[in-house]
Image 1: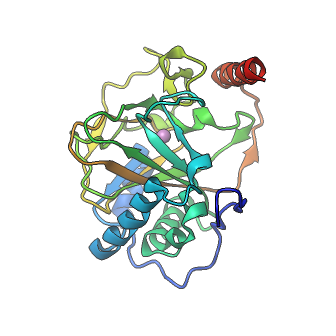
Image 2 (image 1 turned 45 degrees about the vertical axis):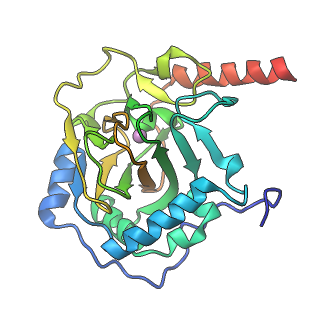
Length: 278
Ligand code: NI
């Protein structure tokens, strides 16, 4: 396929020939439910880590140009022309469906069922690739701050580094117990509505008890949609690659509506920009 060929949304429910071969223990499941996050050392074999990393690097090299429309800079604006500080590919498995036919995905689907229940299903994936020495931090946020405020979620994300994840290169940090908080006020990063990413409004949440989760390649962290998390910038000489999968129980409409004003500010900025260039 070339850049002009539309690609379908990945079929995350596609049956796999691979069966879950790694399982969470009862102790790990209890830890996740109590603390809102969990770290494990291996979600796939070391051999598969090498294979997945090659697929991942080929996607970011994007020699066919097919990925280009699905990349953006989380800390830049939609029209940032310079090098991306926090390059990201939305739905990498749309461009490399082989990603979904891995032990990694068989295991993450099975583990999500262990944590959320049998009805859990995969809803999306993305890839964040922090360049050496200069990748920006991903600021503190709750994932649910990005989502539709009219809906009620029971969802989690699984974050998988494809090289060691360390404090130096940008491992995940979590605030234990924050999954039980409401969605607290967020703003576009730097309070600039042209920016794609969100951050918690400074001072709106107590993040003082955060813990770092360093991992070997092919390890994984799990967090609920409201668990506060962050990754620092990459101070190492290698890329900090992470593959992220989202899984959920069926969404429900919320009984009590809520408003996320930060989303409105971003929409208004994008509409204004389209108008200005149009
Ligand atoms: Ni997040």
